[in-house]
Image (tube, rainbow, N blue to C red; front, side, top):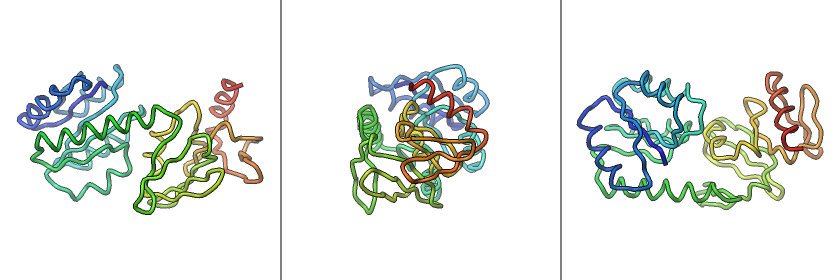
Length: 224
């Protein structure tokens, strides 16, 4: 897995590099002290993981992450735990409070490995009502936003979980699922008919954004 580190503190940067080099499955391909250089590298190279520090200028950190279009997992580091809840809005694997021990970093890498294994198969695990629940991708019909939560509509049940739609979108295979509206992601294989304004799955009507119509046409053409 290719990873980069973004941290303006040189000593923190060196410490993270040392920790990363212990794990052969992590390939450090970039070290950056500013977002401009990091963004340029991300745009030009395949990156799987970003380890990024939330410092006093935390709004710049989140603004930078908002510009990313690639499906990249994020590991946050910070001296302060107050931003942990906000990281739910991103493809967050872990939130590491500094100073970071070697054992704590090892747990993060193990979590990253487990996450990758789960998402390479035909199912995912979601946290709902304090339990981890296995959901088969083929059973998901669509996903809808509910404020700070999302609801998974499956063949047999509805599952509500704490997550943003943007973050959950990163966990789904892009050849099978598509965000067709600011509040909806649909399973492409479940679509029966659609027009310029709506997608129909069974008897349910789901809104289709005007600027997503062409993308949906292309996605469904490729699947046929």
